[in-house]
Length: 236
Ligand code: ADE
Image 1: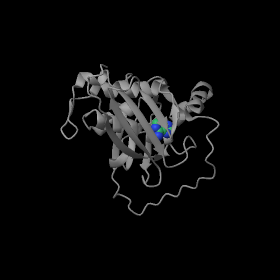
Image 2: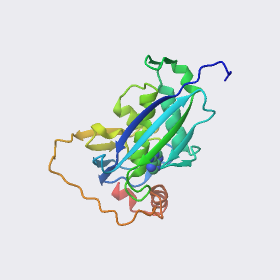
Image 3: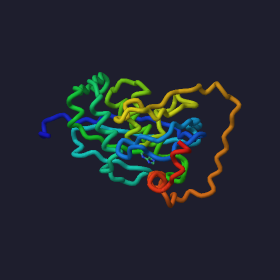
Image 4: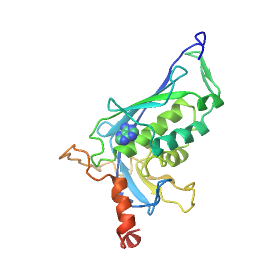
C-alpha cells in the first residue's frame, strides 16, 4: 500500500446463540466437507445466556487475516476457518458505505484482509456447542461486512464448512440440519421446523458443573466412532 492511499477500517458485529441438539448427529460421512451421517434437530437458546459475539474488520492496512478468541490470538490456518473465509469471499458483493465514504468492489474482497474478534459469554469447548455458535456467528458477520445475500439456508451451508450443527440463528428456533445426499454437500443446510412462539413455555436449564475444556473433542470422538463402531450404521 502506498503512503498516499487512504486508510480506513470497515467493521460489522453479530451475535449468535448456541443451540442444543435434541436429536444429535454423531459421525461424519465426509470429514473435509463436514457432512454428517444423520440429520439433527436442535433448539436455539437465549442469546443473553449462551452466545458468541463477533466483530470483523476489514482494512487495506491489514497484511493478513487474524483472529482473537476470548482475547487470545488463535490460528486461522485450520481448514474450517479457511473454508468459511473462502466461501464468503466468493459471494461478497459491492459495498458503498456513504457515511464513511468507503466503496469496495466485489473483486477487492479477495485482496482485503480481515481481523476477527470473538467472545463467548459461556465456557468454550466445554460441551455447550461453542464452535456451532462461533462459526455461525463468524459466517453471518462476515456476510454482513461483505454484503453477502442474507439467505439463511445458504449461510448455514457455508457455516457447515466450519462445523456441522450451526446456522445464523436468530431466526431459527427448532431447526433441522438436513444431512443431504449430494457428495459435494450442496443440499446440506439448516431448515426451520417451527419458530420461537411454537413452545413459548419451554424452559431449558443449563447447569455448568465444570468449565474445563473437554478431554475429547467432538471431532475426535466422532472419528473414533466412525472408524471403530459397527453399531453406528443402525443409529444413523
Ligand atoms: N470456537 C469456539 N468458540 C468460537 C467462536 N466464538 N468463534 C469461532 N470459533 C469458535
